[in-house]
Length: 333
Ligand SMILES: NC(=O)c1ccc[n+]([C@@H]2O[C@H](COP(=O)([O-])OP(=O)(O)OC[C@H]3O[C@@H](n4cnc5c(N)ncnc54)[C@H](O)[C@@H]3O)[C@@H](O)[C@H]2O)c1
Figure 1 (cartoon, rainbow, N blue to C red):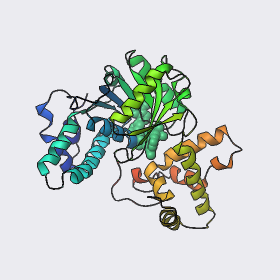
Figure 2: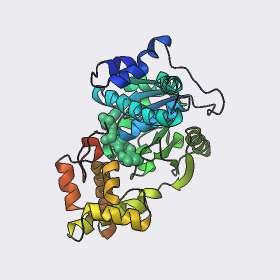
Figure 3: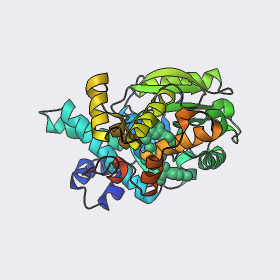
């Protein structure tokens, strides 16, 4: 298991981040639960598999609300995950403690004390009350991961996937605990977005569903119940809209900039569809649409987009690679 300090110490570019945690580390030998009331009695240890955009956000939200958090990913991504968490905590701390540097520092230190990382699934799962999966949107990879998680986790552990487009039932199908398996669909950036869709698949027990709802609430989110249908509520409506914006651009009828401006000023959206594609990650949108297209080839809403395929092949994935429909100075991770 890696301490936050050890990981960030290696990253010489992030002086601020190292400063943030410098004093936290050796004052505690283990993660301490900060919050005494309000935490789901059955859930204290949260394991997040995948330290990318969503994994980092979920880990931060859980740590911020007093849970012990363990992030499982490879060395590179656990480092990037901590850097991302640090950056968003800086933003929150500046807002929360505008004139109190000590308060801001304590706020960040307390949260970092609750986060550890590991590259080993066995270590990540041994004490997990809940495992939240946030790895790449690929059914084969997710299934095989959950197979390993099932073996590595105690019987009491409940599982949740943060999938955007796959069926929870399909992901859970190889595990021995489908009744302890549900969906927790958070939104990006997790620290700012209030919604969490909680998915009750066919075999999810009422007990598991209720625990997931409570867990989402404990993370400060507003849970909305969703049936196990592709894209749940939000993405089933959102992705066809994003694809329609891509087709509009592909036909040469408008530019990403103009479409974004039009939808922000004319439809009242906070971000335009191309800005949103860059935030979500073009690879994630492509995986979702390709899957839906395969299942429903006649449905024009799910028709693949050439420009999307081309940009993914060129690794222009949006904010996470510094280039999507727009260019970004700060890569998201
Ligand atoms: N990006 C969004 O806006 C968004 C929103 C809601 C849900 N989601 C869903 O969340 C999940 C993750 O998306 P993301 O945007 O964070 O992706 P990402 O590409 O930012 O991160 C994926 C992470 O998974 C890790 N990973 C891959 N295979 C792994 C394995 N077997 N074990 C451990 N780690 C592994 C990678 O190293 C990477 O760090 C996907 O299912 C996606 O559909 C994404």
